[in-house]
Figure 1 (cartoon, rainbow, N blue to C red):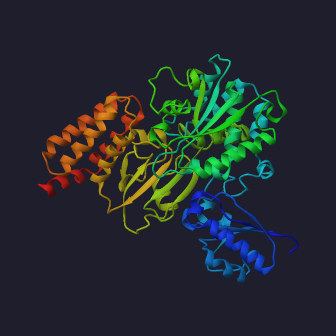
Figure 2: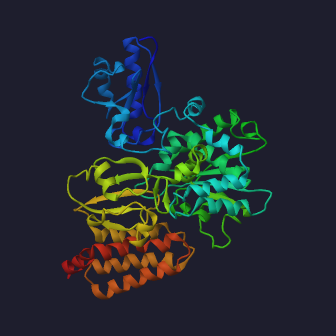
Figure 3: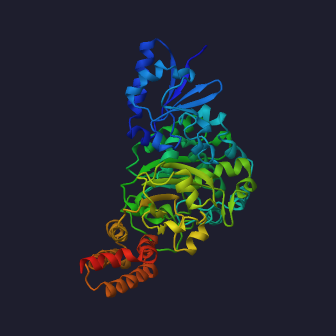
Length: 518
């Protein structure tokens, strides 16, 4: 062996939470003891969370993986010759041949876990900036047209076409416009935004600069929730590096275009996932939703035209510009085009990131990739789209991941979070949880949400307690309809979805509770 061997240990927060830092320290100590010389890289996570800390060794034939590794495993790994790909009980083989990864089609996550997140050189060498360089050769109208032709829809939850939003900002005259990235990823069971910011921050930066070119904005903000300190730290460092390399600043890649980017930390309010509440927070006020119209695209941050997209939406743009809208549009089904980054969580055997084209079924995700429940018991329910998403029963797992197919069933794809429950779950409690969550997280601006959620908890408690269950279930259904029709934003409007799904798909849950209490 002629040079140092490169060893990758994730710096991703999920890997660190199960001991990645301690493993990295143990590897460094053992390497010093053995008198060898390794090149240790702290990469992002590959997204195989049940195998974290997953370490990789770069061999001439490619990278091989070991995991999950604990600090006390390190001496044994060195003893088995893991720097040469030696056999060990934790040996997983070539990383790219691991079935969970091999079956994916990663576009947005193609570099996450592969490169050093803060290496500008590795980013460029792996195709980074190709989209931005292409965009610099195009007119703003052509950039917007390309994004529109790709079929990209917002990955934050609403699924609104990104190109239409950008066109509105482009066509709204103003001397000052903004691009705001909503990284307030608050849905239960979601972590893709965090992993991308920690594993490939330059991709998000590139996407935001392209958005700025498209609409004529010269300033951007990444709004990150306070619960993501690692992501905030890495994004801040990446922005500083991008500025030094001329990717940001007065002359983007030596062009006449200027774009400045800043990180702002939210206080952890779920409502700030809603775009206008986020804008209020960015302006220094409490996160409260604004009435619409006017849309943020016309009157957003500081009253100026503003693009508001989430992390995955903006991070998809560089690929669309570099590979072309047609290539992106060829993936997916119907009006759901491209890939989606699904996040498998809850009671699931193999949790983590799965990026595949739209159209894959829920069953293929939770059973094919996820391996079923971690408990080994039958799947009873799956919630897609965060805490405001519907609970789907096990006999509906054939549903394709498609915005319209989910909407037809009263459900939503949302941010791609998938939470699995086995047959021990208490669905009456899950219905109550939805109302309780809204009661705690409502910004309080409108009465249907602020008061309706509190009354919803009270009514469900009466049903569970066996108090006039038939009348109170009718009252609950009426309350859900009022919240849906009259709430100011999606927070109150969607809170009834999980409650209704329990009533529709698990009707015995509430009735049984009420009968037991009587």
